[in-house]
Amino acid sequence: MSTGDGAERGGPRFQITEEDVRRPDIVELIRTHLAFAAEVTPEGHVHALDVDGLARSGARFYSARRDGALMGIGAMKLVAGDPLHVEVKSMHTARAARGLGVGQALLDALLAEARASGAQRVRRGAGTQGAFAPARGRDGRSRSTRTTRSASA
Image (cartoon, rainbow, N blue to C red):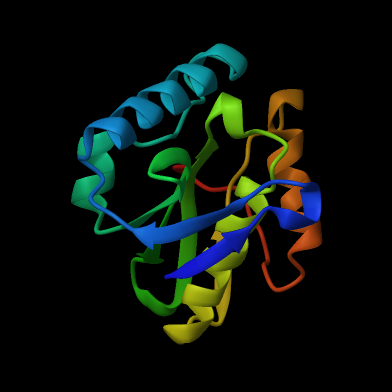
C-alpha cells in the first residue's frame, strides 16, 4: 500500500502492506493484542476481534514491517449498511517497535486507503483506559478522522 517512514523519529523505513490475517507472525501479534486488551480493560468490555472474527468480518488487514520483521498491525472494514463509512480496527504495535512511529504510519496509511476507496467517514474505537492513551493521541494528530466508540476493535 505505502511505505511508512520512521525517519522523523530516527528509525529506518518500513513497508505497510495488505496481508493475510492468518500469517503466523500476525496471528501471534493479534494474540498479544487480545491479551493486552484483556489485561487493561474491565471484564466484559473487551471488544477486539480474534483472527477468525477478523477474517469473517471482511476487514482488510495490514501490517507494518521492517526488513521482514512484523512491527505493527491494523485493519479496516466497511461499516454495515453504509458504503461511505469505514472502521479502523485491531491496531497494535509490537513492543520492540513502540516509539518508532509505527502506529501513526499505520493509521495514516489506513486513512489514505479509506479516502482512496471513497469513504467519507472513519470510525475508530480506542479504550478509555490509560494504556490506550497513545492510540487516542494518534486520533488527535490525524485530523481527517472522526472517532466514535466502537462496538468492536
